[in-house]
Length: 298
Image (cartoon, rainbow, N blue to C red):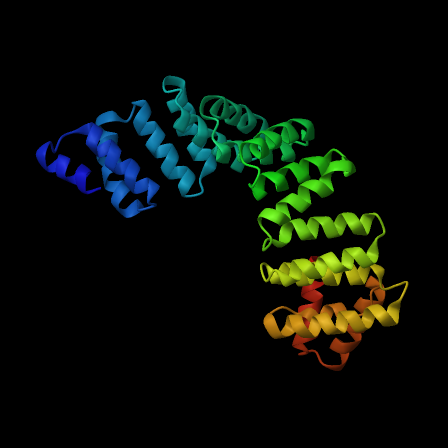
C-alpha cells in the first residue's frame, strides 16, 4: 500500500497504479478506500477489462453475485486470465450455476494446480453428484499431501456418495488422524455406523465428536437426534441418556430450547402436550419456543 501511494505521489495520473491500489483495497475489503478509486477509474477506463474485473470483484465481495457475473463475463471476453476465471467461478457457484462454475474451476486447476481451488472444484462436483470425478480430484490432493485432513474428508464424502463403503472408513480414520480435534469426520463415521445398525459403536463415536470440544452445539444436536431415533426400542434407557445430555447442553447453550427433546417422540403426541400447556398458560414462553422450533428440530 505504501509503495503504491508513494508511486501515485510521483505519478498522480497513473491508471495502472490506481488499478493496483483499488485491487489491494478490495482484497482488504476496504470498500471505503476502494470506491473513490473505482469511481475515478470509471470515468477513464470503464470499458476496459481490468475495470470490469475490479467492479465484478467488488460486487462479489459485497454479495451481489449476479451483478458480479455481468462485469466478470465482460472482462473474461477480453481477459481470459486465472483471476478473472476464478472470480467468475465463485460468482456462478453462489447463484447455483454449478455447471458453469465447474467449467471455470477446471480451467483454473489445469493452469495452476492450486490445492485450494481443487478443493472448491471437488465441493462443486459433490453438489453435482459427480462422485467419481470428485474422488479422482480428492485422490490428487491426498497424493500431494497425505496429511491434508480436508482432502481425506472430501474423498470420504465422494466415497459415501458413490456408495463405496469399503474405503470410506479408511478415509475418515485418516482425516481424524491428521486433525483429531475436528468433529466432522467423527460425525460422518457415527452416521455410517448407525446405518450399519452398530448402535453402540455409533453412540461412542458421536460422543467422541462431542469430546473434541469443537462445534459442540451441533454435536449435542446430533447425539440427541440419534437418541430420539432409537428410543422407541428402549424408551427408559434412552430417556435417561437424553435427560443427561439435555442437562449438559443447557448449561453450555442456555439460549437453545433443549427441552424439546424431553417431549414425546411422536409428533402428534408432542404437539398435543404443547397445546395443553398453552391452554393453561398462554404466556408459557418455553412452549411457544418449542412450537416455533418444532419444524426446525424435527
